[in-house]
Amino acid sequence: MFIKRIKIKELLKAEPTGQEVIVMGWVRTFRNNQFIALNDGSTNNNIQVVVALGMLDDDTLKRITTGASLKVTGNIVPSLGKGQKMDLTATSIEILGDCDAAEYPMQQKKHSLEFLREKAHMRFRTNTFGSVFRIRHSLAFAIHKFFNDKGFVYMHTPVITSSDAEGAGEMFRVTTLPMDNPPRNEDGAINFKEDFFGKSTNLTVSGQLEGELAATAFGDIYTFGPTFRAENSNTTRHLAEFWMIEPEMAFYDIEDNMNLAEEFIKYLIAYAMEHNREDLEFLAQRLAEEEKQLPADKRSELGLIEKLEFVLNNGFERITYTEAINILLDSPAYKKKKFQYEVSWGIDLQSEHERYLVEKHFKKPVIVTGYPAAIKAFYMRMNDDGKTVAAMDILAPGIGEIVGGSQREERLDKLMQRMKDMHIPTEEMEWYLDTRRFGTVPHAGFGLGFERMVLFVTGMTNIRDVIPFARTPKNCEF
Image (cartoon, rainbow, N blue to C red; front, side):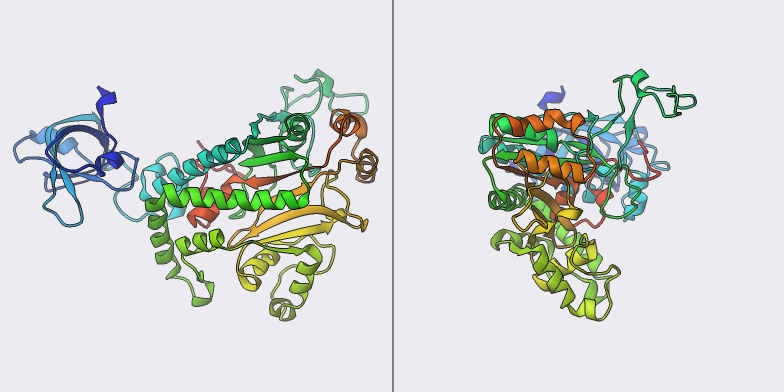
């Protein structure tokens, strides 16, 4: 029964010549006991189902409410109404699932994004989130296609790990020990030898270190999976659980790394532009209407489609960290004390600094390289100046950092010294150091936060609106 249905997106491409079809979906509206707007999630566009007067009894008509699911058999005919090519003249209607109109939260009216976050299990049925998550799907598919076409190996790295790739310490602990009375050593510390894995473990913050192991065998690999940060950050740019794409490439230097990252970002945008044009145009119109409420100086200079086309058609600006600091120090914003955070060589650039560089100064994506070693991770290759590392961040308009990467330190002696300086115990990382002992090679990689990429492509302004069920401080619903 069900495999004979046609999806509404495909149906709307057909020519209405009276052919019989079966469609299934959810009622958006029902007017005059005669016109049903039916949607099945394949597109924001509805098919109008025309019900002949007297075809259905009163009890059935009352059950056709917004949100109810239907199976409709009928014939496709040219529409007499404006703005639509076809109607579906129903010959039979079966109600698959009732919906109490008084209780249904997704009525056909404008809902705030805050309200919809509270109804995240139902918000997929709105046009806005239908578009966002169809685009998210396309971007996820494009990631695999991009790397597969380049001969990369897709590697699954552990979700549970005993290492902290970033050295950040902001991790979610994984344990089976009783929380009310865990076993302890003589010094009072928790005895993790009695835990499931026999040691302290946590949810991964990155698959990079394990990815490097694979890259030194396969050459080019990528990971794409969930990562976790126990960072108590309630912002529009942070999540506790998010997805990361992390390619690692043997025989790459920092320049190769930057080139691949720029090509990758442009590929994803181009894929969405080609396969999700209708959804992007809907979101572009939505964004334009939303920005009308903002003061003129807060509005985007380019619409969503124009912004994406601009990124596709222009090379990313490439500057050093030192050049970035000099630009910020010389900026009107700094001189007029408009930055909340101080600017000086050695600081970790804040979001306001990153956004100034891309939105005010260069007005396009920027790749910053050569960061101070003191603010970067232990595995990044030390530059000849002894002060900076071969790191690179890609900064995007409206978001700030979207990609972080580096050439990795392949020299064993320098890597071990760096680990010593940063108090990272080498004995626990012997497996990682073996890649430098046995056939080390220059290699590089980067991480792209998937939700930030979706945020950029869709024009949404809160990262909680581009992941199905957001995990944030004090929030783990659904």
